[in-house]
Amino acid sequence: MLTSVATLVFCAPGYPGGAGDAQPFVEKFATAAATISGWPAGSLTAVYDPTEQGGLAKLASPDAALAFVPYVFFFQHGAELHLTPLVQADVTGIGTQEHWTLVAKVGTAGPASLSGYTLLSGAGYAPDFVRHAALEGWPLPPDVRIQSTGQLLGALRRIAAGEPVVTLLDQTQAAALPTLPFSAQLKALTRSPPLPVAIVAVVNGRLQGTRAQSMRAGLLKMQHASDTDVLAQLHLHGFVLPQLPAAHAVGP
Image (cartoon, rainbow, N blue to C red):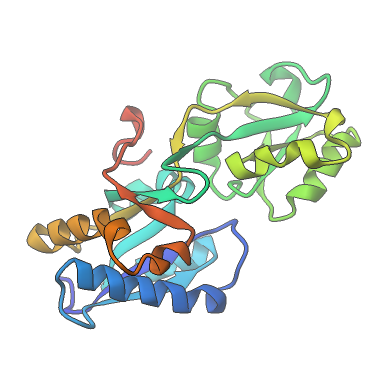
């Protein structure tokens, strides 16, 4: 049973910034979301965690009613956490969907040539997402090691130097590739179909009926509210109804 005060858990593994940096902004967002949704003052709080394990721990709390997570996290953990999509984020400069790009050294061939390689990515904490969403149509050999890293520039240097490494980049990261001095040594092997960027979801049925409906309606109209700074501070343009790939509609 959900307590009278619900918590919105922001969890963004693989992205820069610590919990202390983001906390004031997510608290302001929660206040604005509750107000526009017609919830009583103080009935929605927010907490931010930049780590996978920290986010999972916070989402296990009985008062964790909502999760605001990257689609990578949703795909990896949606089933176990019983996450039901409420809305989808429209992220400034990206939109509601993005492509992921697998990058290797020039001369690398098809999937079989990556046997024994290591794949480094900010999404590396979510191997199911890497194999079955981002690279769904480009099957990696079973022995490819998938690892999480926040040092993508270092990973790209290793690729250019000829080490048995590849990296999976999100849309923003891939767009910056041509600016690298060694970009001529890099090659995009494949690109994912368009995938959602981020999801706001109900956690384990802890928000139901009119409360869930009012929160969805409120989030959908936030971009038209007067205080759009709340969205801008989180690099958001607004929200839309969920547009998940059919095969991923309720998580992996």
